[in-house]
Structures are given as structure tokens and as C-alpha cells.
Length: 341
Image (cartoon, rainbow, N blue to C red; front, side):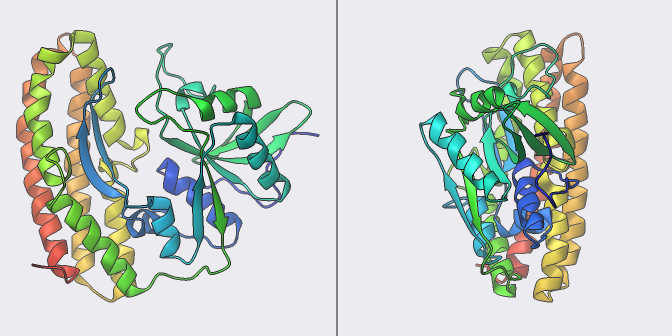
């Protein structure tokens, strides 16, 4: 045997690990759907500032409805997507091999710190919220083939099992994988696109806690200048670089902390709903993405400065300006989606 992808599986240029992996499975099954549409229909865009104990602070542009972004995106395209988890590495491995034997690629959650093709400069790094597609297996070498963005990577099964079973917080993968049923695949309805927009609007403008939504951006502006009271210089340096990674395209947000992808979703939603004002909002989120990219560049530059702690106070003004831009944009979407109060 040799390590080859399933017949007909083609690596695609993708942006975000979750939506990119979903798109790979959709396209393989003849149901190609854009990442941007999957992200928006799945209500995947939001904001959170989070500083978990023992880990660097996190500025994230993803969110997830119940039961999951994957399931909701599937519902709105007529595809049943289920997430499975198990405490047994053996069961997780067998389920994956069974799907591959049936001719289906397998979307799995992993800790990227255990994948050998990632280079973290010799530093230990763990992020268990990463998602990839396993699209091939060679039993002779016990290797799997992983599709990641537009590349194939051979990975020893032992490394994949470490990545799937990692217990590192805050996002331990728990051996998760997804199953797909494409029997009812269809185009999303206009009302579904409107509802997806309205729900994301609600989470941004009326979040349950002040660390989320537009309030969360203002919270970040308040909290980041206090990092010097909570972390040493090297921890601040890493926190700033981590901020850059999760905002920029490097970290899998598509750039602009998912605002570029969301803007393109709004362009597709304009065609689905016939609401031309959504195209105007699409352009607005492109500009907001540019503002986030400028902030990411500041974070990277600050992380490389001799004294990163001396720079963190500079973050407040641009973050507050971004919060104002986001508030205005989401309020306009609230009106356009027909959910104005």
C-alpha cells in the first residue's frame, strides 16, 4: 500500500480549520459550499476576550450556537452533521478507519501541538480546538494523510492519537469526529440566512457577559493594559504574539478576526435574500477587518520590541475605535435583517 488520498479527494484553498474542513467533506460529496457561507449560516462570528488560568489571554472572533456551528450550518444546507466524542482512543481510531474504509474522509478535532508538521520554534504550544480532515490511511506504515488548508500532510497514527486525545486545556479534543448525511442537501432559504444574521447580531449587541460581543472588545481595551500586573515580560511578549496569531490569517481566521469571511458571507446572503443593503454591510465589515488587521500588526510589532510591557497601554484607543465601528455595523445589520427592536 501507499499513503494516498481517497479517490476524488482534492485539497482546497481554505481559511479557517473548521469551515475549511466542512467544505472539504461537502466538496468531496458533490455539495461544494463556500467557507464563508458555512461560517455565516452556522452563526460562527462573534467576539470573546478570555484569559484562562495558566494560559495566555485569548481574543477570538469565533462563537458557536447550540448545539454547534457545524450542526447549525448543516441544518441550513439540509445536511445532518453530528459530533461524536469518546474517552476511548481505540473506539475513536476504529470509527475513523471504518469511515475511511467506506470511502469517506473524516473530520477530526486535534491538539495542533502534537502534529509534527507544525513548527512552534521549539516552544511547547497546545491548542486543542483545531480541526483537520483525515483523507487517507496506509496500514503498512500506520500513517494517515491529513488535508490542512490546501496541503496534504502524512502523519504517524501515534501522533494523530496523541493529538486527538490531548488533555491540554482550554479546548481538549476528546477524540471528537463528525459524521455527515448529505441525503437532504439543498440551498439555504432566505429566511434562514436572515435568521443566522439576526442571531449573530443579538450575540454581538446583547452578550450574556461583558467579555463577549461589542462589550467584550471594550473589556479587552480595559484589561490588556493590566497585563503587566498579571504576567512577566516574556508572558506578555507571548500574549501579544498570540493576539496577532488569532486575529490574522496566519491563525486561521481568514484575516481580520473573521470579519473578512463574514463580509463575504453577507455578500452571498444579499444574493440569497435579495436584500441589497447586505452588500453595503459586506463592504463595512471589510473595513472593520482592515482595522483588526492593523491592530494585529501592532500586537506583533509590540511582541518583538525590547520592552513589550511598555507598549500594552497603546491598545486601548484602537480597540475602542474598533468597538465603535462594530457597534454601528451590527446595529445596521439588526435593521437590515428585520430584527430591529
